[in-house]
Length: 201
Image 1 (cartoon, helix red, strand yellow):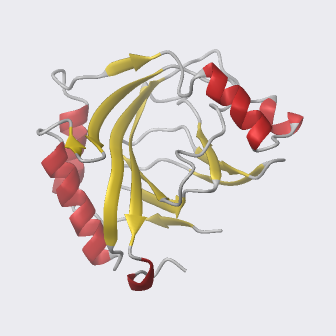
Image 2 (cartoon, one colour):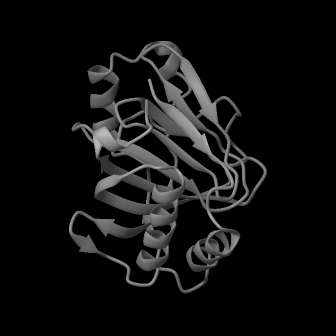
Image 3 (cartoon, one colour):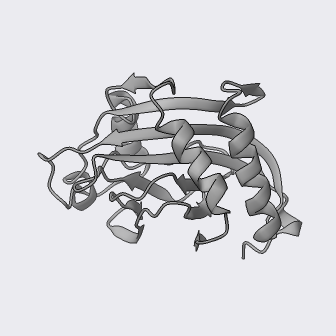
């Protein structure tokens, strides 16, 4: 199981540029009533054989999505180049060769004071094929990223502006909504890597 956190690997000016672009009034965000469709959530519970211990705290919440890259399509020419600069810097400094980018999107979640601290969004993985997940934390906030097996939480990572979380995409995970900060903004990145060229073991 591979889960690794990188701090202080991205220059502060790039961190600030990403945060300013995404939290600017002109950034286009699209509303999603849930992080995962209800039908997909029900299928995941069966497919991953999630225990009642895991399911009881799942309460999927609303979020806003800003699509940047989807396959061969660059959906935002404003944020795309800055995110590419961040990924290039990470690749060079972490000695981590990126073969292909499947998807880059920003997720914006808002504080919900009605939720309990132990609750989290729907447990999932991003796609069925082999891939690596990368989460870039855009702002200083709260709302951990949780990792699971079928029975329990096995790891958690807290947000910090500029932090990069890299993990094997086959590990089940879920986000928590912020309880203190007004919002939680991340970049959700799915990538393919050059297996022989990386220090990911």
